[in-house]
Image 1 (cartoon, rainbow, N blue to C red):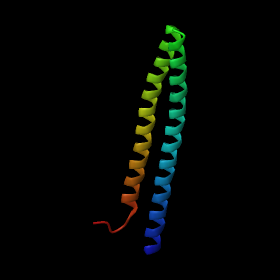
Image 2: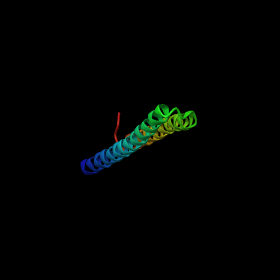
Image 3: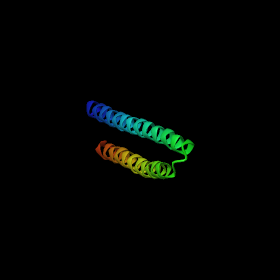
Image 4: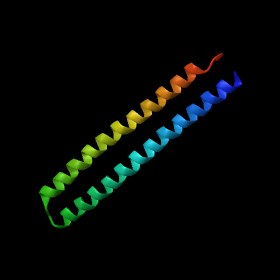
Length: 93
């Protein structure tokens, strides 16, 4: 019984770590894209290129929406893993 419980806990910790790493890599990637778009938008502002500014701003808004969806999905996966872990532990009060 104790061996099974330890195995379940290790699996859960592995799942948490995987979710955390996925969240971190997604956040860093989106942060880099956001930074690049912001720099390009500032350059377009200096050149007074309204069309490019509008495009960059539109991309930033889409990126923000995508970021929220991706982080919500990662949170959902993490909560599902926690629920699965809670169901798999025997003799839980």
